[in-house]
Image 1 (cartoon, rainbow, N blue to C red):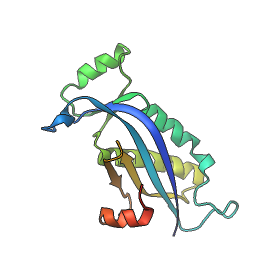
Image 2 (cartoon, one colour):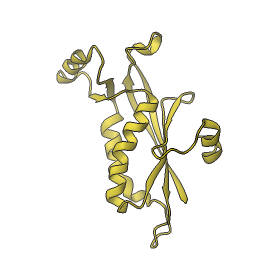
Image 3 (cartoon, helix red, strand yellow):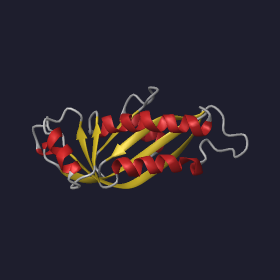
Image 4 (cartoon, one colour):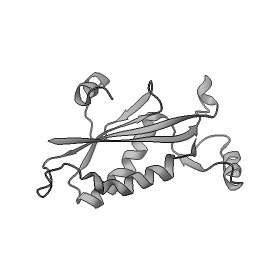
Length: 161
């Protein structure tokens, strides 16, 4: 298997985890980033790339729309109607996700981006892993096809992200 990586950075957004007993229950913001490990059984015969990054313009546009200066709220947030009102009044740009945790966001992103990759590469390229990072200290990973059993294996695969 061949692999390549791409990082998208600088997505300022707010979120909250209403079921958390600590400070994460409050609306707060971070500059999120997304780190993808792409895989393919064979490189592109023309370019010899796993993924031609010029084919990721649609991915970047989708990430900008979803995460740049937006407010991310869980689909089951008890205050969802209030956030919808704030969105309707132009106070926030609301994005409702199944869950806004880093781990759940990584899965949400993979589910959407893989569809885009399938269109661009004819299904040749797959996402081996995705890291969703909220700051320098915290991130969550999703491996759609299984993969690393623990973070030490992931770290040895990609180095210090």
